[in-house]
Image (tube, rainbow, N blue to C red; front, side):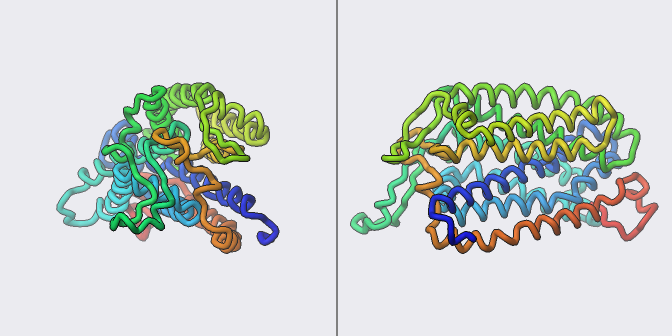
Length: 397
């Protein structure tokens, strides 16, 4: 089947896979969103235990998806991996550190005689919830606004300098953190807006998940107001980011010469010229709003599924927008011709072809995750369970 695809088809196929993994990761950030709420929805240690045992059931899936997303990106588009992860390493190290702290915290927060204490690990989980989502959103926004780097593949065969052959070079000392204050076209506003939009979306999804999985009137009552507040803040930052994106200069690629150039309204035109991507994007946004509205207006507890599906579709289409239709998905504001596209940054045709056959296993992995998810969430969490008054064999985080 895959042998019938040419090199360009394989590159587009793998961008779709990587983009889908990124979209799933954003949905699964409801774990981080839930953790960021432990000091607002929870007023007692028992309240915090309820919230963290709800998110604790899912943190490993989020962490695994993050690793899988990074691994797939590395294998299919290694030049992006070496450029971004090797150049903007401060921001990626901060993200990875936040997730490592999360893993340690869930493992040890309730262990007997842990020298840091439960409250310290709760702070770590809160910080992971805040930093993990904001930094990821900010990093993804640079796919649209660009970063300062140069790429010279000729360095691989230049042995005259006596130095290690380095293809990509970062052009400022902040190593990715400059995305928070870069002034070109006020890009920092765009980057921070998406970071905050992802943060408040994660909180919204976290609240929807709590309403679905926690059987407790106190938490349910507090979550109703929190859902409205976080929804409003999410919409403010997301709409600011999307509307401004439609008017920004994008980074287009001449398909005949492979020259990268700036094009006004590029991302808007991408939606117009790829109508299916634009339509599915709008459907995703509507599903997010429907899921939120179900819980706010009708008192439903199933809004997480609609909002979750909407999140995946929305983010997936945004990533397809920035990768398809002759667009540089990781533009360089230092040297336009160093910008990365799916054509100039991918693995070889043989590698992509081999990986494509392995990708046929993905539906089975997703089916396994779904079965495990349903089994774990077969019953809502209660205070009695947290206090070991029922089912003493239940693992408590």
